[in-house]
Length: 245
Image (cartoon, rainbow, N blue to C red; front, side, top):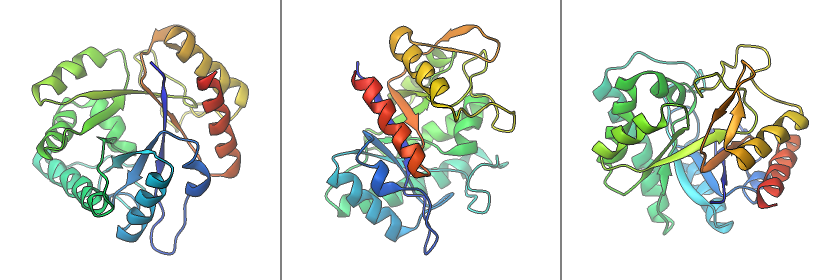
């Protein structure tokens, strides 16, 4: 199975611009479109949907904790029903905009702290799954492919959900398959040699080397890339070339 590239996109807000969406969109296969929790607004969402459609990119919703000030990178103490409601509201907004453009969403990928917290906290995972399942659109849920992926797949099946298993090209892994905290030095790879080596390892042996130096098995269907600056866009293109080769 070919690994598809995905990227967080559409994260501008009003007059504030973030990222290089027009440069990145032609490179990726799947667009994780911000939908109001950590960034974006209705106009930005509309523009991003049209851009994705022009490049035949799969549309995905990128909901988060309701935390624009912290860009969704801070975990929030929320009751499960409250979190479920916020995810439904964000994804539902993007669904409506996509429908107005004659398109439909294919999946949901939580953003930032929500993405990381749901892997560690079963209660948060259930709240997110209930939200996606409640939207009744056969949406898939994209989550991190950790050593617990079989457990998460079993849980998803209870809600009638299919998972898209994701890996990262530029992040260091812990021994359990989770991402090492960004606050720790070396958690984000900037050197092309390190990124290239991780992509090759993922595609050739379905594994990554953890911070302990030991390989762990990762069966990924999608690979996340970042494109916040022109250099990153070039790296994303180089990763795509590697995958196609």
